[in-house]
Image 1: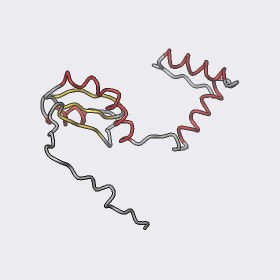
Image 2: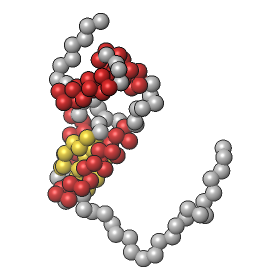
Image 3: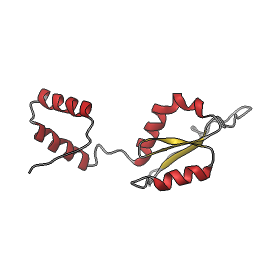
Image 4: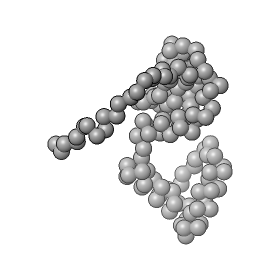
Length: 128
């Protein structure tokens, strides 16, 4: 079967080809192996996981958006918005429609005063 793929990141494709050669595979064998892995669900991350990873990667840059709502969906930073209406509009316009998103207002964490209690030792896990 002949396949034409447009708009690939050339750097990633070069790296992929090089890795295929290092593993002793042809490009078509490497692509088939990658498809099998992707379809097997064993390497797939949930929407929640990819959004959390995007947030962690971007976390150090959040301070420049203080007071605004930032949105992470589809595994990437979507944008910073002044209102929740802007957030809702941006999420509705995304394709494919995300099943999960992280929305937070930067710089508005409530600081908890006083002594906190850790319940970890008091809660027992029971088998079903």
